[in-house]
Image (cartoon, rainbow over all chains, first blue to last red; front, side):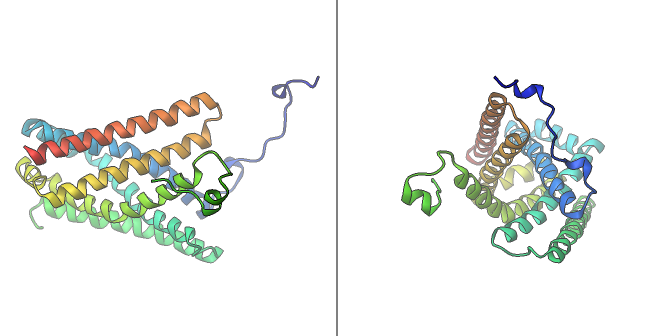
Length: 136
Length: 125
């Protein structure tokens, strides 16, 4: 009988840490990472709806938490993750219908995703601040 | 709804699992979340610094509630499918993987129902 598979030290195929980070791989990892952040964010929205249904006092408590420094930091992380996952998601949907497979195009759309997600996050926060100051 | 590739339907053979169904629903919910997500961000942005009365009044409109309910269903469905892929990729132990996938689906369903009931409570009372 052959020895059990766990006794044999088989060579493993190289994994992430072996390769130099490239825009293709980094954006792919970011897509999954932001997806996990957004999954956590969905809990936040659930609590927000629950606090609204629970009445004025709990809603204002939740609102104070969201507008605290920690709350705003979480919202900043969520909003960037949202816009990144949205822009890169559109890139994925285009790949699904066969568009954008040229390596130069992949890099170009990659940088477009980075710039547009930062820009959209910035615009959103600028609008949020304007609303807060009563300018909108 | 059950999506299968045409070949699989015709032959009645192929994988007993549900890869095509998963793949398509992940994309359908993704497409739905483009307008719904953008709407929700704008909606939440406006309410974040508004008093309770405005948030409460917003959820009395059937349009707002319809958009919010659609957003929640698409969001939790998409999250559930996405997390399933992550467990499938990184958890080699079959029973642990199965438990995490089932747990994620049940957890997402529970949160979606809780969100929907909360919104309907505000809308209907």
